[in-house]
Length: 458
Image 1 (cartoon, helix red, strand yellow):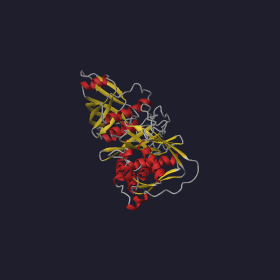
Image 2 (cartoon, rainbow, N blue to C red):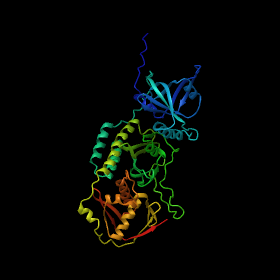
Image 3 (cartoon, one colour):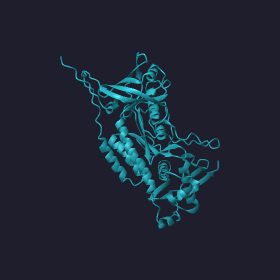
Image 4 (tube, rainbow, N blue to C red):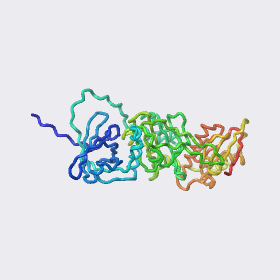
């Protein structure tokens, strides 16, 4: 009789595909008197090479056993090749805040919605376990081979091409387009967007998107709202592999103008109506979050941990590029500064644009349709006012930064991003008004037709 071969120990990295939530894990614990208990676990989260985190949702028998006896075993299954693994764990602590907890909280919302138990599942904490050993279980060959998963791209090659595109970008808009091009062309990601954080309002605003019926440029999400807001607030990637409805996205500003002027200031959020996979990666530079890179899909299980690693690396470069575009901004020459006082040429005839500005939040309406608000709205109002009163059409970024009426923050003003946002909103909603970059730190503002300005104090 041939002796059975020993079951080899494996690295935890091999088990990561089992931790995507597609198939529930089975956990075995023992009470203080040795009585065993077996239960399904809704979420197992990969923390690092030596630790996993399990969701703490109920004070049940499993929880009681862990507090009395920290040793447990976990059975997980790889959904791609049907291989079982047994993890030997030691309970260390429970966290109720921080990146791991917030990421698990967002992911659990997707699992709960997918199983119809959103009202039952509520994360109380994330139980951190040390992984003592991982076993790949011996098994009989399957009668029929599972279909092979679609081939994965060479992630290092994708990162190289993405880095090359980013390094060639000479403006913020080009850097954003380079990133979205990499997602679409090299990773076949059809729905993606980039949002920039406004530190003053603690909201993220969309500056670029791909794959949606409307671009959604200017739409907003509050810090901490949905996977995008959580990723920014906690400075951690958040990945959901199933349909989620527990986290609802903000549909931009909800009629913040008050009763005196009840015009709607919503810019429709461009997200998919029923996403089944979502991932949000914070864009960081110099230790702070400057924005979020977000991707989603109508299909389940579309973004693996390898996709997450790639987007974190690519997002780090984009975050640095956003800061670089700001720091490398050079002032115009003396001749260009003198040109800012030049009179604009006669405008074309035609129906006048009626532009209404509300001082309370610098929202701007054109022909009674909402366009923009906040700092971008204040910038547009300055350009229109100076053009009408002084005949100007050439401006510099430096003078905008020195203009106290715009209320730019002292640190990380993201002026380049705000100008890009205004440029794209005008291109989509009011092409009669146009911002054209003429050099580093310089741009031209043109009104192709007469403009009537109305300033509202309320």
